[in-house]
Length: 181
Image (cartoon, rainbow, N blue to C red; front, side):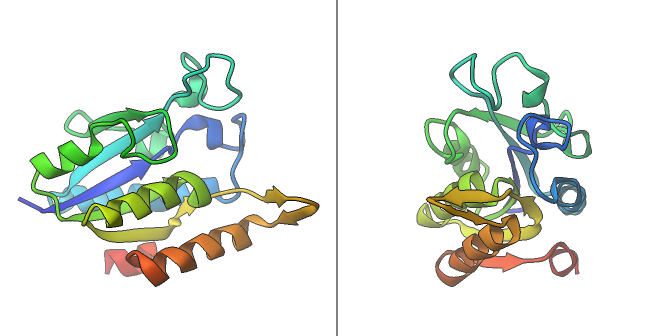
């Protein structure tokens, strides 16, 4: 049995171009995530989907009971997959994720999903801090432009900044092609 888990974070419909909070490059990221997941299934990796559901029903993002909380079809869970619901950016916070990984004897985690600079960043750092060997497949992740003060930071810059920090201090950051080879 594999000691690796593929963790798909927040690849949900609200992030699609038709959703309430469209991300730059989400279609390509979801397609790459699907390729990573299929390769993981073929190797016997544990597949874990983490879905964000807001605590507040009036939330503009991931509001409970809305279509936006549904998974993007390309990466929808299958019967043998694990689904974990979270309410915070860090997929480990107040969820069963860490216990699920420990119970499964998981040593290596591969993280894909959204948003690069929020939930991917928080989840990846937590995984490394908890002692897992971390890989982030960066082209299977997406984000959007962000504002800071009077500046607008383009999505590719936001993404590159986060990925460079993760690679520097937390784990391996790779492409889908390199991960699959």
